[in-house]
Image 1 (cartoon, one colour):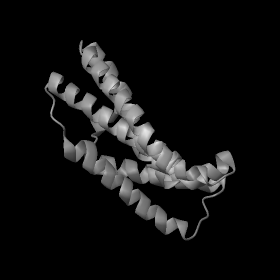
Image 2 (cartoon, rainbow, N blue to C red):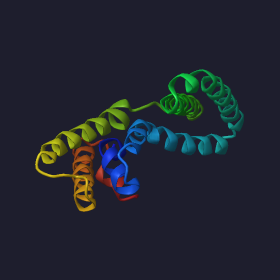
Image 3 (cartoon, rainbow, N blue to C red):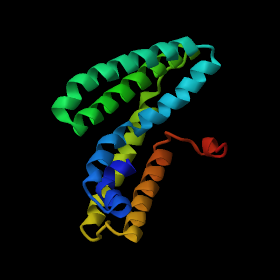
Length: 171
């Protein structure tokens, strides 16, 4: 959520160019999928399901190459970014589906997905109020903005009981 919210500010501070913010903003939503994919692939290998992961990787590679042939000539960089987004989401979902099947685990949509998204949205709404008063294009203010969203997110996750205090003790 932070890369999405502060894409242009991060772009300006790190690269001295706000045009990179477009790429950061487009890729920000797939960061959780990239993380999930790497974690789940390791879990599947530990559960002796490496052939499933291999099938998904090969399928993903074929789809990526096919899409590159069609989308990149027409859409350029945006086409490549669309390919990354589609590919990462699909591969992550396939790996997650396999892990849930093998481990006989059910998705807790409310606590794993809905409550974190609602907490992030509330953090962004509160931040919108502050952006009327503060310019986040300098490092101290950017750190302030990131801190505001992080605190509101943590409060939302804990108060909605998506994460319980006893679970935080294990971190």
